[in-house]
Image (cartoon, rainbow, N blue to C red; front, top):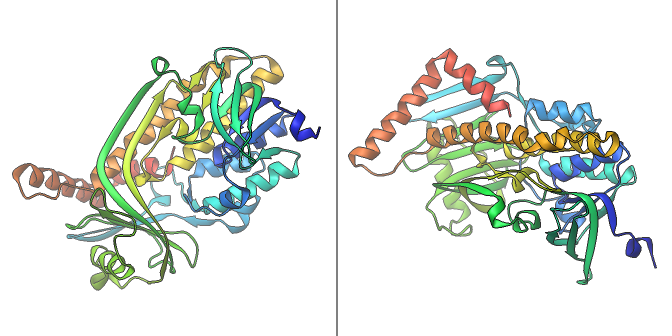
Amino acid sequence: MTDRQTRRASDVVVLGAGPAGLVLGNLLQDSGIDCVILERAERAHIQTRARAGFLAANTVRILERHGLAEGLRRCGQAHSACEFRTADGRFRLDYSGLGRGEWHTVYPQQRLVTDLLTRFLASGGQVEFATEAVAVLDTDTDRPSVTVREADGRPGTWRARYVAGCDGRHGAARRSLPADSVRRHHCDHGVTWLGLLAEAPPSMDAVGYAVHERGFAGHMARTSEITRYYVQCERGTPADAWSEERIWDELELRMRGKEYGPLHRGRVVQRAIVDLESDVLEPLRHGSLFLVGDAAALVSPSAAKGANLAVLEAEILADALIDDIVHDHSDGLDAYSARCLAYIWRAQEFSHWMIRLLHGPSGSDGTSMFHNSLRRSRITSLRTSRSHQDWFAEHYVGV
């Protein structure tokens, strides 16, 4: 038998090779803790899928603290401004000079994942690609197991002391939770975006938020040649319903290209429909199973919190697991859920505030007009009040 066929046990089994799973894996590996990462996708897929790109200041500090920021330091771009465009004009917030004086670093998630994966494997870490976790069993014992479907389609089982569910909202970790052991807090915000990745240089040196009577539009630079756009659409719209010409015309209109300069157009290389939802599970610990990242909570993309929360939670869990496994101190594991939920709800509150700021009802009835007037007042306050700007900056960059 090969080592791969015989080795089916580890101190920690990590489900998912995204930012959360790979940060956790690297930190455990550096402390001499035996761990394995099970990833349902192929290696090439996780290294090329385009996701988030805005890293908060605290995320950068975590990566630097653990020697995981080499690529980030070399290629990451500091970003510190956002611009709001409305019917009343536009205004810019250079948020690095507000609040705590912090800024974002733009570094595409696929590059970060590649960095973390390369380092994990180079230090002897084990990742089982194309291995789908099916269920997590016996979490009420000190020897839980993970049943898997391996790359060749055969079933398999991994055993561990602890399981870290970093496999997203639809992964095996969430599916395996007993219904009577978890509280789910869910909110559908009733807003849908068409998310786009375009082979086009950024059209401004800021994150652009356009508030328009036809709906929201957003501009976020990824690299010097790639830009992320969002455009609000009706719920149920298929991702391929709009032609590229219509997409660019709609973005141009909502971002007021005639007033402030045309957008740099290019080929749309990726589309996805995003229904803005918020979702939180409580607690995040279920015996020997811990939820991390999107498995723990889904934050709408309106404030770029998801990947940053995932990295923070991974560090908190890594520290707690090291204390327990190496030093036989379990206080960190006992406090894991409460500590992470405090950060999650703070991020949810700001995300909800951003959704209300950027989107309003489309009707012309009295209630719709009332809520749109409130939204206009909020934007005016953000444009004119220094204390409001400081609050925005602290929460915009913070986690």
